[in-house]
Length: 116
Image (cartoon, rainbow, N blue to C red; front, side, top):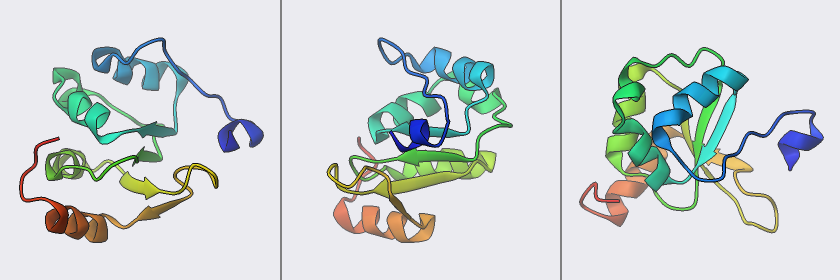
């Protein structure tokens, strides 16, 4: 809702399709993407991800669960702005985000594998 209140456009689909995601980002010139770690994991596994351009993107935000290191590494390799957000539903999700360094340490302490 905050994006709509600020005059932004929200793009959503009937179902998640990682193969079409980079096309939608480019078509609508998206600036912020909000997804859960499982969706990001599927997104980076697509052939498109490694060669797609995201010039309009200001931040890829993840929330709902800790992200596996493989997601962080994929975005770091591409030099793309990835953040792990957190917040209560009552206050609005992704009101805050943790620095990459801090959230990766948290992931390591929580589990020892990169399984989603």
